[in-house]
Length: 230
Ligand code: 3QA
Image (cartoon, rainbow, N blue to C red; front, side):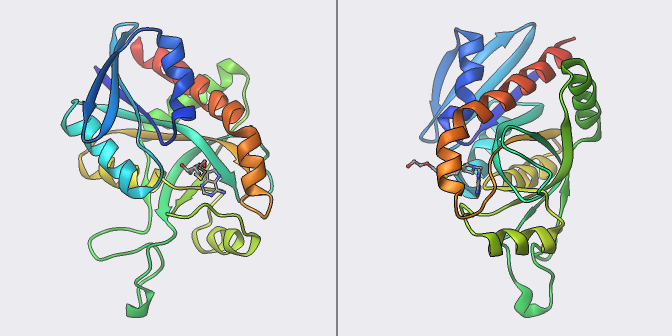
């Protein structure tokens, strides 16, 4: 089995590469892809660079070029739900693009013809994550994640996204990865650890907690890989 593990930023996959130690680096489409064999499964790992376009390219490449059969995303996110604090883990049940807007034609936010407002993640991978959460004695929240090409550092925008999409957390890549995996029929899982509250202090909080939160997420995702390897 071949599993893709992706992040958006170098910091989001660094803990995973560190754990592997050795891997093969291949350049493709102006990005680096890292391949390794881990506990009997083949892994392809990459960070896409930030945003929906780069993450679409990377997810597609991992599936179509490298042959990934499952995709796990690991990274950080801004919290919308006040219940989510820095370092908390969120598993996406479904994702939406908060900046997709053809409402001028009477359509809801996040919708375009032949698409859907939400893309749901794989039920089996969510079930597996519950097992891992239990074993690690970690409190993992399931929730809706909203994605858009904006670093949100504004209470008003954050609350609008929360209200419009019933979203618990926001980031910049999950929903585009979801669209790719759904279209190509590849089970996928999106995990994020909170780095900030998408408010006026977001950039400072992000800079302070990117590494530790990315590490939290990466550790959890590798435990998922351990389970999938069996
Ligand atoms: C932000 C990263 C992008 O890949 C999305 C982090 C955490 N908090 C967020 C927020 N709004 C939107 N997304 C997020 N990731 C990239 S900008 C900083 C880049 O550093 C999730 C995320 N509030 C550049 C150094 O100059």
